[in-house]
Image 1 (cartoon, rainbow, N blue to C red):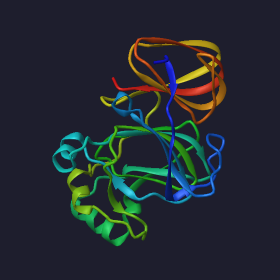
Image 2: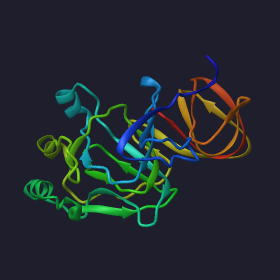
Image 3: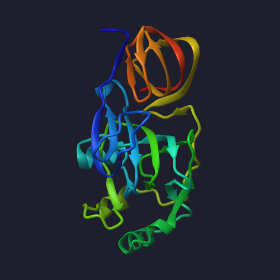
Length: 255
């Protein structure tokens, strides 16, 4: 197997998606919300997200709960903001602690937005969302998401869209205290380690374990193969990979 291999993208249509995916991908005719890069259990699941509408207010379970109830791992994730329209933001946790009764009432009456900790974001911001953190992504954003390989999501409120809600399970797994602070790179947790790589000329990446390079901007060569924004490359374990060019990349792996 070569030391560096492109991971093929998988494009997912979403109601809240966008037709403006450039410069990372060609602009499609239908609304694409997520672009997945899945290398199996060797790497975290990597996604690019594009939004023209708000996503649902939601929460993900931890490993113990997900294995018991969903036969799956849980989901801890991080977001790195790539593009943000003026005023765009995300919600991470609550502004202040709430009771389970307040939580349920706010979800059922559609007033939960007022309890959430909404944060204005701009390109380059990084946010860490541990399992159990109630969160939402606003409109007008492009971001890179790195997460555990799980898609277990409990929707709490969906802004009137006719999709199933999972309020009882969400109440069982949600942290009801005030929200954690936003993160900075590098992000380290038991499920992934992510850091920024700025390329200006030549560099060599030593890869003692399988890892991914996520191209956010720029262009150049990875082992004499051209790279462009929106590509994700898998670097095999025990490899040494030459990079040449200009760009900003993320490097991520499972510790």
